[in-house]
Each structure stands twice: as C-alpha cells, then as structure tokens.
Amino acid sequence: PDHVRFVHEAHISYFSAKESVPASAVCSLCHGDVGSMEEVSQQKQLQMGFCVDCHRNNGAPTDCATCHYKHERPKDGYDGYKGTYKEE
Image (cartoon, rainbow, N blue to C red; front, side, top):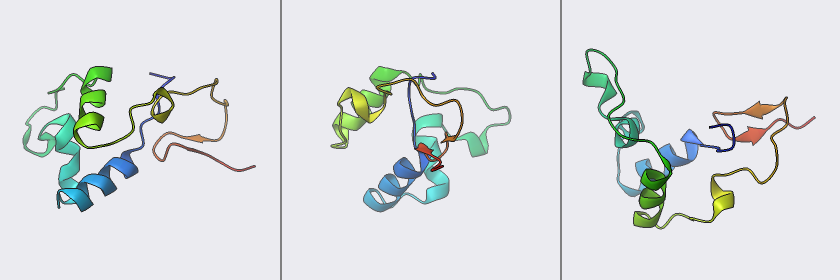
C-alpha cells in the first residue's frame, strides 16, 4: 500500500548476514521459491501480521513508524526500492 515502505535492501542484508542466506535466496523467505515456479504466484499472504511476526521473531522494531509513513509522501523523489527520498 502507499502508506507502507518496504526496503528490500535492508531485509536482504539482514538475512544474508544473520542466517547466511545467499542474497539471491532471501526473496524466497517472503515470496516463496519463485526461481523454481513455472508460473509465478503469490505463496504467502504479505499482510501486516506476517511482517509483524517476522519482526518479532527476528528482534526487529515493531513500532508503527518502522514501516508506516507518518505523513503523506512527497509526489517526487521517492525511491521505493531503497525506501529513501532524493535530496533536492
């Protein structure tokens, strides 16, 4: 959703370091084994409860501001992949 930020890079770095999961395999933790699917389909319900449970199980912050925007995002300059705003 537009009010939630997800930083793939942070999750890839964390699981690669903590679990020694190769960066190319981290995606499967949330998305299923996409590499072996003949036709890609959603394998897990990527809803708030799924994310909060993962954060709790891995000692990640669970406060609202970790994933939810406090204010409306700017229309320009947002990098959804990195979860950052471009400096102007």
